[in-house]
Amino acid sequence: MIVESLLGDVGDVGDDYGASQNGASKTNNESSQKEGDMKKYFTPEQISDALFHTDPMNTCCKENDCYDEYDYVAQDVAKRLQAGQDLAAALEKEIGHWFYDGGPFNTAVLQPVINELEGASHDR
Image 1 (tube, rainbow, N blue to C red):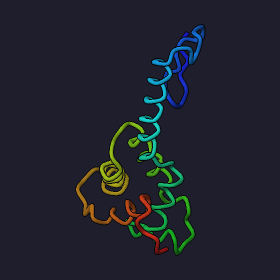
Image 2 (image 1 turned 90 degrees about the vertical axis):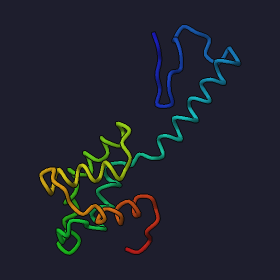
Image 3 (image 1 turned 45 degrees about the horizontal axis):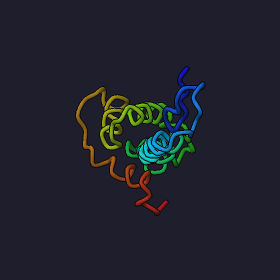
């Protein structure tokens, strides 16, 4: 039976885990690589918060205390990120879907959201 953790494949349950220097090194390298990849993911809560604070669709959610305004969008963006899509593409696809029926729109409105999530924006 193979055991897999958040950090990757650990090996057979019956194996002496860590007994082999090569096996341990491989697992550590895989772990480091996957941990680095995980940094690009944001939780739906983080995404929703950034969308709320930047309000790219001008829904007046901040003024009306509608904290959950972008929750469904955020959940779908998070799924796209976990599937390997980059942040800008995921936001563009989901904002387009939720607000423009999949049609084109001015994607420049998404840059403040990206800045907020990446920590580049500190003015709230």
